[in-house]
Every structure is written in structure tokens, then in C-alpha cells.
Image (tube, rainbow, N blue to C red; front, side):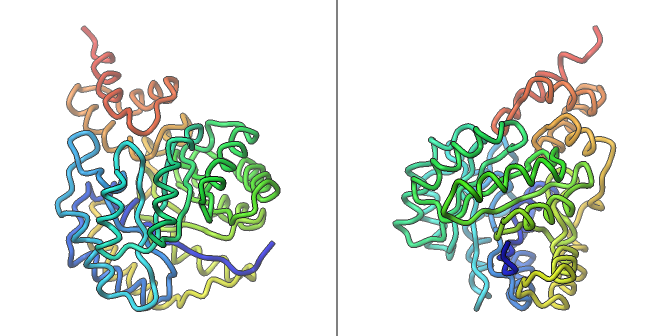
Amino acid sequence: MTNKLTLLDVSLRDGSHSVRHAFTEAQVQAAAQGLNAAGVPYFEVSHGDGLGGSSLQYGLSAKNELKLIEAAASVCTTSKVAVLLIPGIGTKYDLQQAVSAGAKMVRVATHVTEADVAAQHIQLGRELGLKTVGFLMMAHMASVETIVAQAKRFESYGAEVVYVTDSAGAMLPQDVTERITALREALSCEIGFHAHNNLSMAMANTIAAVEAGATYIDGSMRALGAGAGNTQTEVMVAVLEKLGYHTGIDLYPLLDTATNVIAPLMQQPQEITASSLILGKAGVYSSFLLHAQKAAQQFGVDEREILMRIGKLKAVGGQEDVIYEVAQSLVKV
């Protein structure tokens, strides 16, 4: 176990889901200034579904993400901008453009069983001089042995950090401990963990991850993120410091940014609602929530039942169209 942790804030990427991809350059720049003042090493800026995500399928962005990256990078003296790239949504060209705009880290994200689709993107990240991360999404859907095998692929491609990602907020602390411990024993690179709070387990899971050996930890200010949100960055900093971990974060500027920048732009409180709870119970991708709500309204059906059916189908990111098919099937003739 190490007492030195690297925190990454995802408010300006995962939080994009919650605000329906409506961040402005001014909002992003203000948040970036606060994160930089607080000494947060990395923070993510992009569409919620990563580079190239602005589309009818995933939701259109109000502003060009390259402009948002530029706005964030322009005010950073110590913090660095990270971007998410999901192969099949984002391209190598998108990554090159993001680097030109100021990105210093790429997190290449795949479904937990599909790390092999990321080889060229991981390799490009290293060639471009980026801190390069492999991001195994929906990690609750695979066995520990499968996760280890997929993580080894990421490492072999050149990933410097491999993340266990609880995209559905479906894990319990023992699930996290098993996965992080196994990766710590099998890999030479660093291990990261990304939580969602759909079962109110985000903080407990984060603590389990660091105790098992994760050194990269994600959070979002005010928990702003898909579903019920992520581990709340400012709370996480306070808790980890009380536990004896060194985060290097100045809590007061972080609190000021969460209060004065993030809270006013939130479209609704970030809380565990009936539907976000179902995300965690059924193991559904957290970004499906707003799509399910829209489909439920369109077809006049219960969004919770949509999510339960989606969970049984084991749908994953990229299959948002299935949400509308399920909603239509629930309409009583």
C-alpha cells in the first residue's frame, strides 16, 4: 500500500452527461482555474462519451469539445487536461486534435472484455507523449481472471495506468478489493479506480481500492456525473487525508470551486433517485439514465422497467438504441 495518491477529477467529462453536454467555455475555464489552484494533477474535459461523442446517438454538445479543452488548458499552470477516448466513437485524428488543443493525458476506454480494440490508440498516446491510461469499463460484468487478462493486454500495448471502472455503480467493496488486488499482483504498471454512486458505495469502494493498492483515483466535484454521480472529489480528499493518504490537494480552493462554479451549473441535485438506484441494482451503464428517462416520457412507460430490462439484456455503452427498442416493447397495445 502506498500513501501517495494521484487524483483525477472528471466533473468536466462525466459531469457532461448530467448537464446534457451543455458546458460552456466560460464554465469549463472557471472550473479549470479552481482545479489548478487546488493542485489537482489531472482533470478530464470532453463529451461524456469521450472525444467524438457529440452525436445524435450519444447527445449533441452545445460547444465544440476542442474549444473546451483549449479553454481549460489555457488557465493551467500545474494541472493537466485529460481526455477520454472510446475506440469506435473517437478516432486517432480526434486524439491528435485534442493534443493540439492542450491535452496531456488520454484514457482509452473499452468494454471490460474488449481491450484488444485499443492497441493503436494506446500506442498513439505514447507516441504523442501523453500519460496513457487503459480504462476497463463495466468491470462488474467480468470475472477477476478475465479482468486480469484484459488489463495485461492494455499494459502490453503501453498503458502506464490501468483502471477498474465501475461504470454501472454496481460493485460492493469486496468486488473492488478482489479486482484491484488481482491487478496489483499481475501488473507492473499503476492501477486506477473510477466509481459511480448508484448504490451509495462510491466512497466505500474508493477506500477499498486505495487500500488494495490503487494509486490513481477518480472523483467529481459535487459528485457531478452520470447516474447518481461519482465519488465526490472534495469529500474524497478530506476522507483520504483523515485516513493518512497524501493527495497533495488544497481543500479550500476545491471547496470554493465546487460551491461557486459547479453547484450553480447543475441542472438537478446529484442524488440517488429511484432510477439511478436501479442502474446499480441491474448493472446498467450509468450514462443510460437520461436516455431511459427520455424514452420513458416518449412512450409513456416506467423508466425503471426499461432499466431492469436493459440490465437483463446486458447492454453496454454504444447500445443506446436498445433503450428505445425496450421502451417501445413495453407499450401496452
